[in-house]
Image (cartoon, rainbow, N blue to C red; front, side, top):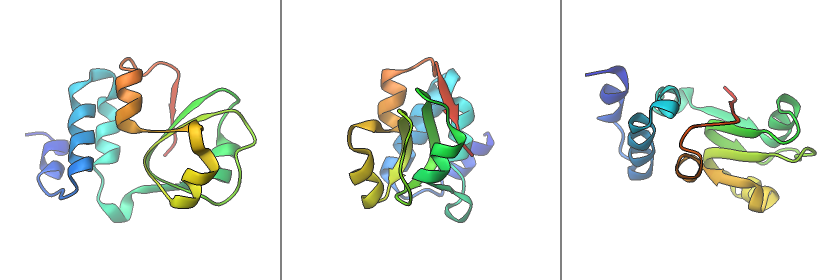
Length: 116
């Protein structure tokens, strides 16, 4: 039993469990499974302004945690995350996807930049 499987047994959120299992099945996304499976207090949380600073124009940015709504995106980006605050959803609209949606649309993880 690997580290992710041990962490998976303690998870209660069905959407989180489904996402981790989907990531584990796809070899190009397996590294992200461990980041998503972190305990809640170590989960990554990034604001839109932080994402904008660290990204290049046209990137697909994956945040293995929660995306928060402070700031604005000035660059054209696709933002992928496990969850979004209400304010972030309103600001991003069509420029946001869940990790599950991204894995299905981009199974080879091409052109994806993971922010930790």
